[in-house]
Each structure stands twice: as structure tokens, then as C-alpha cells.
Image (tube, rainbow, N blue to C red; front, top):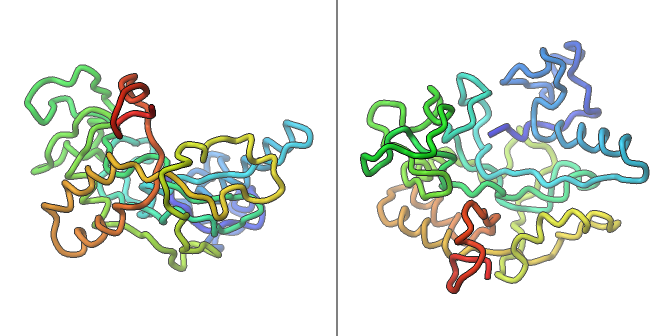
Length: 265
């Protein structure tokens, strides 16, 4: 849920209140006051690059940033809250045109928009959730407010959430993201989770440019269910999302082996 923000000249540009008027120092979670220079995802990428390069001789990592749900900058009352956050929106479409291609290879939907982070204490069917995490009962979590349906278990489709994410989506760049492109990664069903194969980053060029990535048919079907009951701009945004590649989460063993589109095999 951390916003992309604007990339600073250096990873520690905002510490000690050095450049408070610089847009790259916007800090909705007040992290720099705790000596954390990674107050947005772009500056976190700078920080990771520096830390790994200094810690491992000859290693210059390239970063992939998850933009699945960080389209809204400041929607949490408490930034420690992470579960099914109210007011969130889908972020930038997957693309290899990033704020700094020398450091960031791609923006990608790593946490699948619309899949629950975790369950409410009481499930949609009225049963008690056996895997309830108190963090999913935070004041920022969907399912705790009036007229909000309870959240299903982690990884299950949360129709109420995906419609909120679509309603608040920012699928293309705005003035808050510098040098970020809009060209979507080419779609296909052949490559899938090779997006996380960090050994590819040893290459001198971005290994993801011009590649094809996996469009999960199960995810497309789930979006289709929500599209059927959505209206207006929310429906249009969901339709735009339906054929976008995203990561495939192995949250249970049954997703590994078996026939059909619901498993890796």
C-alpha cells in the first residue's frame, strides 16, 4: 500500500528534514522522522540498491515494484495497518517504463488486486474465521466499518474490495510519478512467475523488456464476476484490468499440482 512517490536524487535526501519542500520528500507515514529514508517505493528502491551493492561486492540489484494496490497516497489512519485497507486503489499498470530504468526494471501487480489479505473475525457465511489475524480487524480494514461486508480468508476473492480498488484506481501516471511510462508489458500465458527470477538481473539489459507475461485465467474469471455486478467507471476500470498480467500466489498446496487453470501444473 506504500505509494510510489517521486524518486529523490539520493536515498537519504529527505533525512534530517533536509529538503522539506521537495515533492520527493512527501512522507504520509512520517517514516523519515524515525530515520527511515524509504518513505516511498521509489526511494526504497534507491535504498535497497545502495545497501545490497555495499554489502555484496560486484552486485547491483534491479528492482521490481508492486503497484497492485498503491494508487492512493494517504488513506490509512495508521501506516502499520496492512490488511484489506479501506480507501486503497489499484496502482500503475505493469510496465517496464519506470522512474529510473537503471534501477527499477518494472512495475508489476505482485499482490493480486481483489484477493483478500486476510479474513474478518466472522466470515461472509457467518462462521468464525479459523485463521483470523487481529490486524484484519484494524480501524483501516474493510469489514470493520458500517455496511461493509466481512472479508473472506486470505487469497479468496473479495468483491467489495476489488470494486473499491477499481473506483480509486490510478492506472496511468500523474504528476506525482516522474518518468513513469504507460506501455503495458506484452501479454501472454507462457512466462508467468519468471518475473521473480532474480538471477536474470545479472544481465546488463532489462530482461523484461519486450517479454510476454502470464495472464491468470482464474483471475480474469474472478474479475468477470465482479464486472457483471459493477456499474459506471468502476465497471470500465475492471474491464480494463481483466487481461492484465499479475503474479500467481501459491497460498495453498492445492494450487501447485492438478489439472485445469487453477494450478501451476
